[in-house]
Structure formats: structure tokens, C-alpha cells
Image (cartoon, rainbow, N blue to C red; front, side, top):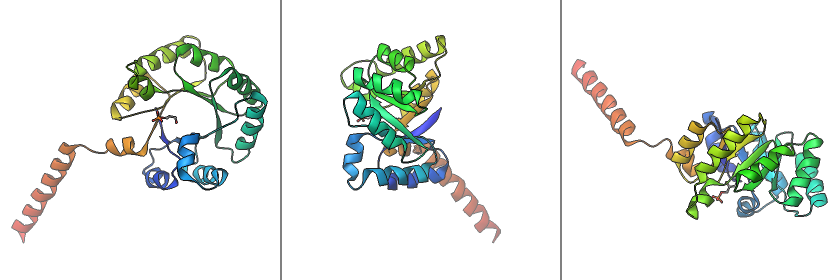
Length: 217
Ligand code: G3P
């Protein structure tokens, strides 16, 4: 399963990419708004660092304008994937962009039928929001299971990109279910590095080694 960072923050990306575990980045208008500055320049800089798929979202809501904006975003860098919200207009725009060879990530997916429709028009990725479903006492990961089953049964090449991730257990469940990608805030990736038994174990190894060295001196 690929691991993407869900952020528009270049510093967070630069800190984690050298570890070799980050396959791509997803952004959205809320994340980009937090960064300020020139959004196109930030997307270009992110592409240069990550050298993998970078989702940049359109803010137009009418299909012709979405297509124009999508083409413009795709022209920033070959790594850009155009993110389009799941609406009737977004589905129509996805069909056009996909037919031009532009990769589209259909976002704000909250049901299996939405994912199926997005796959039918050639989306490269669908982004179901698991955390926001969990927030309203719905089964976010249950939706991932449904979408993975449907795409497998019908041999869709559309990738299931688990989004709105809240913690490491979302990553574990996504991997077990066979999701293609999990996009996470940097804080969730950092949490995966923490285990008290690793810390205690390493401390003991180093102390034992030091003791033995001191005994030989
Ligand atoms: O990028 C889309 C998605 O991951 C947003 O997550 O935390 O705002 O629900 P969140």
C-alpha cells in the first residue's frame, strides 16, 4: 500500500520524504489556504521534493471551468493529479480530463455508489473520507471494504485512496483491506514511529553494551 502525505506544508514533506516511505502527496483548498503564498509555486515545489503523484484540487464548480482549471493545474508538473469534488459537474469534468490523459482524483466520496460512478468515468483515484464518516458515527472503514470489493469484482483500475485519516489504526485497516493508498497528516505518520517497548528496548541494549565496554577497560 502506498503512503501519501495529506498536507500542503513543504517543511512537513521535506522532513519525511528522505525516509523513503512517502509515495505522494494530497492537498485540498483548506490545506493550501493554511499555507498562504502562491499555490502554483507551492504545488511545483512539492512535486520537486516528492517525485510522485501530487493531488491539487480545483475550486471551480461548473464542469467547463473545472476542465479549464484542471488542465491548468496539470500543466504545473507531470506529477500533478487533478483533484475534483464528486458532484454531477465534477463527474462530467472527470470524464473530459481523463479522456485527455489527465489523472483525476475524485474527492469527497462518502458512498460506494459515488466511488463506482467516479471509476466509470475514468478516475485514477477515488478519495473516500473515513474520518469524517467516523465523526458522524458511520463506518468509514466499512466503506473502504465495499469499494475495494466492487473495484476488484469489476476489475476497475481506479485506485482506492483512503483519506481523512485520523490515526495509525486507519492505516492498519486500510492495508489489511487492500486499499491502494492511504493519505495521512504528518502527525499520523510520526505516531507510527512511536512505541514505548522500542524505546525501552533500545535503552537497555545501549546500557548493556556500555557496561560490557566499561568492564573490559
Ligand atoms: O484531503 C482530504 C482529506 O484527507 C481531508 O481530511 O481531516 O479534513 O477530514 P480531514
